[in-house]
Each structure stands twice: as C-alpha cells, then as structure tokens.
Image 1: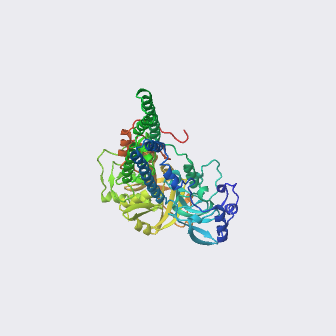
Image 2: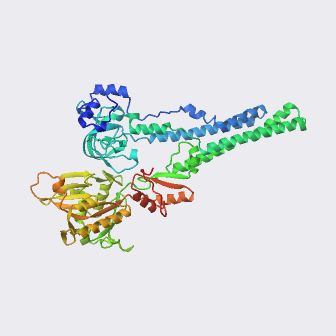
Image 3: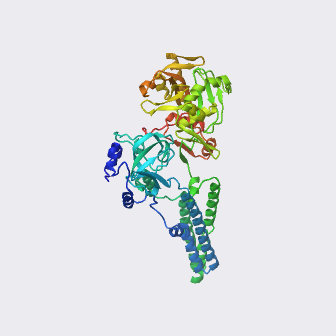
Length: 605
C-alpha cells in the first residue's frame, strides 16, 4: 500500500487501487494479514505508569523525604514513639492519596466510550459487522445516518452525507461530505470534503468509504498522542510545599546547629547529650501534621467537586483549579445548549416571536409588531396568534417541515434531533405551529430533492400535493430573494417589487446584527410534464414565504457562572469557530463582555 499519496486528490476508482482494495472490499485473509501488520484499531496510552510507581511517588516526594529524615533522627534521639508516628503519617497519607487518585483514574477509564464497539464493512463482497478494533487500512466501511465513524477514511460514494466533526473541531454543525476529488492545496484535513474521521458521526445521509488510517495513525490518535506527550508540570501547591519544605529543613537544621554550639561552648553539655538535644530541636521543627492536613483539605474539595459531577484525577489539581486566573471555553455545547432554536418567523404581513428553547416542541407563536421590517414593536406587546392568523402561516410552516431531512424524536422523556440541528429547529417550529409533522410528510410525498450546495446556498424538495407538484425551497436570504418573482400576502400571491426585496433584506440585516442565523423560505407550483427536476427549472420564479431566524441559546446557568468567575477575578475567553458577531452576541447575552470587546479572528492570529 502506497503511503506517499494524498487520497483526497484521487477519484474513487483510483482510491481503490492506491489502497490495494476493491469495491467488494478486502478478503478475510487479507484483512487478517493487515491486522497483523498494522495492529488493532485502538487509541493506546503511550505513557502508562505502573501502579507500584504511582504508589512509591507518594513516599518519595520532597515533603515525605523531610518526614523520613525526621523519623530517622527521632530514632537516633531515642524518641521511637514520635518516629513511628511520623512514619504512620507518611504511610497513611501516601495510601489515602493513592486510593483517591486510583478511583478517579478508574472512573475516567469507564468514561472512555467515544469509539463504537462495532463497524459495518464490506468484505468479500458481503456486508458484515465487525469489532471496530479489527478495522484495517483498505477496509470498505458502510456509513449510515447515526453511525459513529471508527477510522479515518476516504469517501468513494455518498448520498447527501453530512458528518458531525465536533470531536475534532468542537463545532457540532454538520458538514457536508462528498466523494468527489479535492484539488485544492494547503487545506486543513478537517476541511477536505471527501474525508471522514475517527470519533465523528454521520448526521445525515449515507455513504461508503475506504479506510486509510487506523488507531494512533488517525487524526484522533495524533491528538491523543500529543496530549499524552505533554510533560506534566508541578502544580502551584506542589511548588509551595517544596518551598516550605526547603525553608523548614534549613530552619530546623540551623536551629539544631545553633543549640548544639550553645550546648557545646556555653552550657558545656556532654557531647552525646548535646547531640541528642540538637536532634530533638530539629525533629520538633518538622511539621509532620502539615502533609495530612493539606491532603485532607484537597480530598474534601475533591469530594465536593464529585458531588457536582466534576471528576478530579489528581488531588493537587484541585489547588491548581483554585489558582486559575483565565478560563478559555468553547461556545457550542459549553456556553450554549447545542440545540438550535427558531426565535422569530417573519412574513411580509406579520412578525412572529417563537417562545420556548431547545428541541422540546413546547412553545407558542406570538405576534410581534406588523412585519414591516422597521422594528419589533414595544416590549411586552406580544400576544398569541388567532386561529385565522395561524392559518395564514401554514405555507411558511409547511416549507420548514417539508424542505427538511431531520427527524425529531423523544427518548426517555428527552427530545433530540437526528440530523442537522438547523433543520431540526425548523421541524420544532412546525410542531409549535400546530403541524402534525408525520402526517404532513405522509400526505405530501417527496418525489425529488435538490440537495444544498455551497454555490447555490439553498435546498429544494418537490412534493405531491393535492394532485399537483410543489417545490419548497430554503436557503440564504440573499440568494433565495434573487430567484423570487412573487411574494405571499394575506390576500394571496402578488408580484415582488424592488421595495419588497429591500424590505426583506433589511429585516435579514436586522436579524444578522443580533447574530441570528437566517433562512429564507419560498415555494413554487411546478408545471406538469417535467421528467427531471433541475436547478434551472425548479429554483426560479419562486414565491417568497418568509424568514426564519434562529440561534443556539445560552445555557440558563452560564450567566451566573460567568458572574461568579468575574467576582473571583477570573477572566473568561470564548474560543469558537463561529463568526465574530455571533460570538459577541452570545457573550453579551451571558454577561461575558461589556462595551466594545476584542474579537480576534484566525486570520488575525
């Protein structure tokens, strides 16, 4: 197998040749040989420390050595009870600390469930499930919606495939993937659209991909290797304890020498008696109670954090956390709920505010202003829409639900989205608007789809509806509006005028300044007799229906946490892949920034 190639530059047929495989996959014999050659597909710990070494280190740290010396001197000074007491302190402290850290380490290992136990592959022309650890370079993986991806692979076939790469990038927005060759140079691997990676998941669609890297050779494995290769620095409390130990040692020995000299030359004590007296002075200055006191305090802090679902692997880390002055945090899923929510639905005749956050279909559609794009009305003037007003919103809501590939499901009382979070937010909006999503999709059977494309910036579906075919479109407002010739009003469809476009784009800008993600909704009744639905005959002469503005809402507890950090003198910095305006808006909502914040982009860095 050649290792000097960039598989993403090859077409699918060349990929099979380069990776020494076929569209029927590897044979079991060849897979077994490659497993022997490349090893199991797993993330290994490259720096495992034996248990006995982890225990010994607690007997040989700087302060423990001082106590050992103190115990030895106590024996010499004929103070055996004190010596045994000091040894007991050392042993109890070491064993207690070791047990605490051992339990935490075992709990951490139990949390390592990121890699799936099974993977679906084609071997010998047959589809079968195998243990993910037995994947080898050249295996042909089968990817379906909801699957975890078990190795780095090059797509050779895809059908509207999008993956969630948050394990690598921190951003949960699904990214479209394609099997087409990529010719651009100097791309980050995560930006290469025909590659999929270990640790990521299939959000939407399906595909097949040839494995080119497994285990520690994957991008996920390289990240793990880098994190394990980082040298561990001493914590602040370890540095302070070492400093105190040196000071106490110098002080104790200094006092011992001074009193020995006084006894020798001033008091004229016998040498043996004088030596024992000096040793007693040294031992008396050894703070044998300091070590268990510090350990107990850290252990209590660890237990308190455990009750708040925070796992501490090393006791000294607790004090390190207490010394924190800057916290750098991701936005998606940390400061926000990672649940896209539609906040407003704008139509040419009414602006609707949507209550409720997250994926739970609980909330109301409230009238806000008159939809003229000049404001949102006075605070507190929102009211529920009447049945007649709700009926007028049916067409925009149908576009939200039908031009959509995501599903809303309830599992154990919790709602979640299978698919794209943005599309999921539109499904939730349809539910809040009173639509029976399953019935709508059943009654309006989809006959064709024009998937989202980054050049068109829109997606279209064609559905059977009461004996006719209707195209529903959603996409970037600027692109959709350019293709609209009509506009929906309470009195029906009329011609779209230049001032209509100006008003729509003005509302879009207003939402954008509030860092809301905006999608335009449109529809078109398709002419009879069309055999194929293409962009040219579908996404033209559209009727504008409205704008859906959404955002990933902040977690309700984040604002209080940020305020507590500020009170404690801790500076919070947001690190995100989102646009600067979006990040700034979220930061203001949670009280992270006031005034004009500094926004540093990747290009600036």
